[in-house]
Amino acid sequence: MAETQPTKYNAPALDKGLDIMEYLSKVGIPMSQAEIASGINRTPSEIYRMLVCLEERGYLSRGSNAGKYRLSLKMYSLSHTHTPFDELKRVAQYPMQALTEITRQSCHLSILDNEQLLIISQKRSPEAVSLSIEEGTHFPLTMTTSGKVLLSIMSEEKRNVILSRDVYYKEWSAKKRKDFHLAIEKVKEAGYSSSDSKLTSGVTDVAVPIGENDSDLNSVLAISVFSSSLDSEIKMVKILEAIKETQRTINKLIGG
Image (cartoon, rainbow, N blue to C red):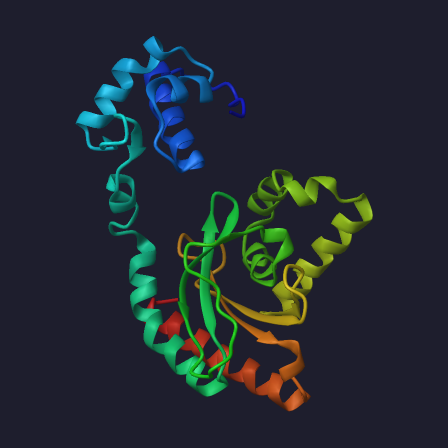
């Protein structure tokens, strides 16, 4: 387990509970008390009462698998209760569907989650062959077109804090960091970004921001297109027109 940074206030019991749940989430299989203890560098006796408590509260369950512990669905249920982004997903679904029908391409909506890009909604293309990005997938901000767009609408202070923790950014040279900041400023000025994917070859991403700059409801609407299908500038212009119109529609619906 990675060492956590010291905090001003200590809560040992809470730390143990979180360590247990994070470890079980990471391994993804049922584990015994001794196995969990070994995995989080504690003794079985140290975590016994916490395991009992988590099981009684419904966060852990034990089946017929030799009484081994696994995460229940309670965390999943809690994570899917109402958030500000539920309303965004609700109002965006029909404009996004219309966007796929106009462009014949899939589109997806993403937000900032734990300093990464999280896909919260997607609409598939009506075509038989198209790109699809699963909801719930995380991507690094610095390696994605949508990430650049999201960074472009943040305050400089917030952006710098997030970048200082990015594993890719920390390994870049001073020149590469400078070029990246210049690219973000260009995105901010243009109001959108269109570039080749750094994660998937042969793919071009087009992305626009949703919501007011640096608000609590910032997100990014994006289309990922097979680069080979962009056989003319006219097609890219039509995609840009369509995604910007969808951007205006969603912003109006959320009061942006």
